[in-house]
Length: 117
Image (cartoon, rainbow, N blue to C red; front, side, top):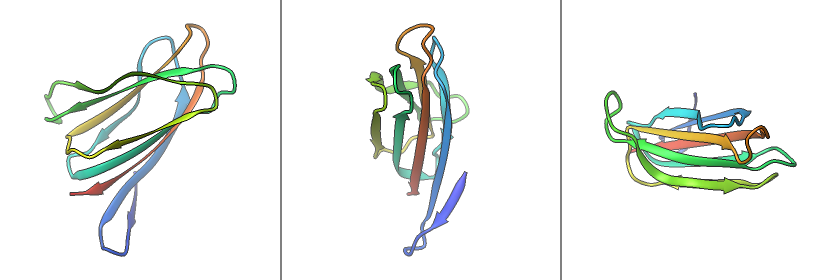
């Protein structure tokens, strides 16, 4: 996880992950957001042919909390992307990705950053 200090003195958490989709949902990231307020994520489907589905789950208690759907299953077409902005505080944010068509994996990249509360 990278940390950048901006002129206001706030420490922004930022990172990128990439991978390939599978036939069922798999975690692209499990992000500890207990000290963060606003969070921005950009999920890009880097495949020129195949689409992906994603969903975003959140929890209020990091260690034992129940996951709740913040964003339900959403399609991202080939060579397309989606900006996700979360304003509310959460203990954990989980982004999951899967192939839109079984047996047709697609590459993705997830860039994300968060501002402290």
